[in-house]
Length: 321
Image (tube, rainbow, N blue to C red):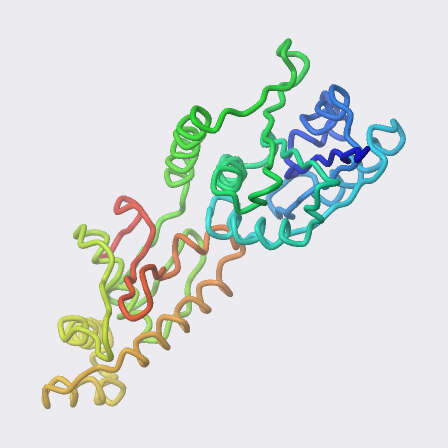
């Protein structure tokens, strides 16, 4: 008789700190107290903004699980997420991790989705619904309630009803997050760019680029489409004008752009992408909180050969004067 080993998967959340912060035990220990599992896999991401290091929470959970004989084995995996609300980052890291698991018929996996951000919960559901976890050995999902909320403690997740609810929760979370984002302040006289209290040391050319994309947000133009080998002439003429307005004495630096405009030449997309990459690196080095970078960097999306570029920041967070 082939007896399957039951394995519990879960992101580690702040609620799992339990007695470390003089609180009740979190959802992971609650799940293990209510249902028997042979093994536990803890997935965690360090967060510099947390009052307590996640590595300490993982250590606490491991010690509790072993000392209370809640499971025979405990494994932990650290993943590197610069933004714990980004589906693409979370899903790719989660998929990379789960692809290394033994998914033979001797294993039965359950994911507890209550710990972690709403985006992490969505990714568990998408993974189970898509079959990316394992088509022949599907992933079971559970939601765990803390004991103080009464029974049932463990609820099976029904895919057809859970996703809309969690997505709404995530949208509310993202909306609140956007309201708390620091402002971008662009001074067109000096060329200084501030994100919150941090001055971003852009070169004059990088300043002109960033001002262009900030202006696109203010004018509700959406993302800039770039396809083929050349960039639209409106962009070329605009960044030349911005450069000239703010840095009138740096005419030698503008000469290559000026010649292209006068000769009706084309601005290569390779030069454009190179400058975007440099701008984003400057932002990454300047902002202490890496989780904010995704909002302030010039993001790209779309298929290869037809990319879209723009800022993911609300218009009310941008000041150009």
